[in-house]
Image (cartoon, rainbow, N blue to C red):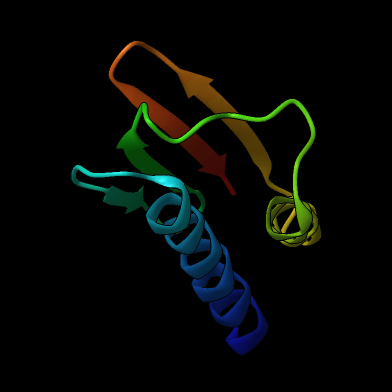
Amino acid sequence: SQEVSANLYRIIQELTANAVKHSSCGPISVVINGDSEKLHICVKSPATVRQNDKPGIGMISVQNRVKTLNGKISTESDDSCNYTKIDI
């Protein structure tokens, strides 16, 4: 639906904007996989982007949009990258 498409667009827009805003350098990747029943989105950014314990307004918006779509969101970090993963 158009509502689902708009929410997905805004989710990816916010995640990439956050990565650009908080990253000092390096590539940012967005991978989208899915089929007729499920969708998986992964945004990967350099580890220079700090994962905060308390989400900001942008991440709260992303979390609310994911919840609206009955999805799940998780964040992970390793020495080189941060990952935000969404399953809808």
